[in-house]
Image (cartoon, rainbow, N blue to C red; front, side):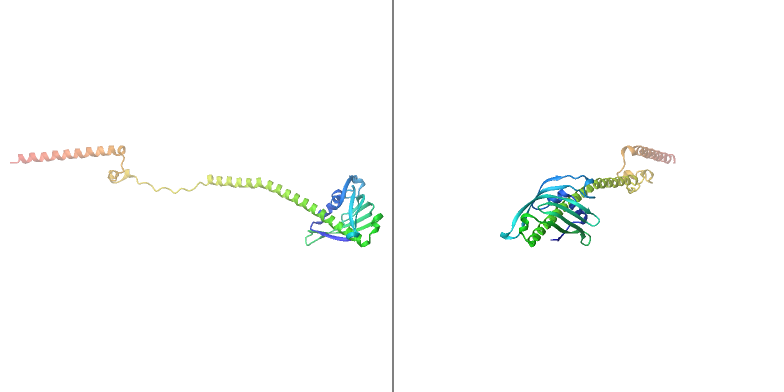
Length: 262
């Protein structure tokens, strides 16, 4: 009654899933977990938890009207595991007694998938003996495939949630660093502005009208200032008056000489 299932989950993740007895048991369709008995690590198999899970399993055997739903009570635990080989044995005690040999192997080009093979070694008793081997093979294979796919989906979602949380935390840590980097760049820019101030074009030198050949050039152009040029205008006015007076005296002197000449 061996069967094989391939799931889109990495080998390491599936190994962690199969070595957690309680989570592994709760993923079995139709199984009700009644209790989990903790086993100290020293008393359990090496490298895995040896907790014993007690519960009830409802299993549909047979097709159509000839089939029936049977409830099995019992316990299950991990009896042994070999991580380097990817194998573990799940011991079952109850109306179905025996063990399941589970083997996990990586699959896919990059190991992104896992192939899981299950070999049941169970002894049937009671009402189970009413059904043929083919009915049991179909029932166990259907139950096993649903169990593995449910377990893989639960652990895949858990891993994705952890990865998303880690990515979010990484973004939160990176955000202050980006802000600080931008702040440093802004500080450098301000520093560069202070260190290297913008070059302002030099204004063309204004003409110094005080050195012009014509002292009244500013007056003729209408750009003089009253207080600035007042002393110069006053001096020039006095100069012209004195010159005019001297010319007037010279003219009078000439007139007198002409009258003396007879």
